[in-house]
Length: 240
Image (cartoon, rainbow, N blue to C red):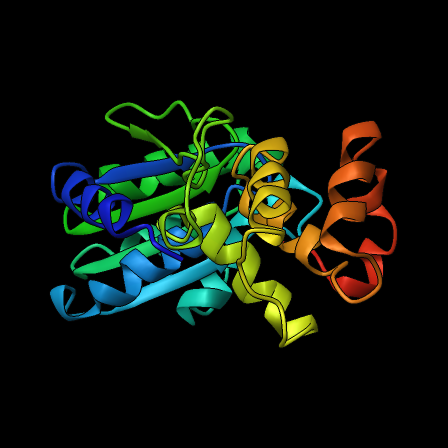
């Protein structure tokens, strides 16, 4: 939703580094931004764009295995996977997207450092709540979606210029197609987006309550506690 400026900046940043790490709070849509940017860049890499998802892993020693599986690289007898990866990728021109590194920072950083040293045509785009700390890494912080200021008196059309408002309305319509921005609903929607500070995942979770709660009820309950968003989250899924 929106993010045109961010997409352009991410692609420009990647053009100037071999390791770009998108950082930000949980729910800031780092993964989505990385995937969309990578999708646009597929034609720039003769050997493709490959995604490694680290979220399911619980131990750092599993990181090389996850990378090898994503790249379809087979293990070799009497050779460590990291060395095998370095040899196989040495002459390849590809982009490796490594998603959700924050809980395995040390192991991920060690492997990325080794691969970058060994593979001159390799580029990496990582997502993490904090930087990997690898030499030459460029950190790019994912900003929240734009939100209206409290003092602004805006029409419904003007409110729709804000990314957070557009996201909320689009997701809310999935629950209740009759939802629209009018003089009555606009204030509540703007307030919800401000309280959630433009965090995409939080906005989507709030919009998922439409149909069971009115916009005003969602706004009022958010004032007291964010428990409204976490209740029932397991059955709605999570975002990154």
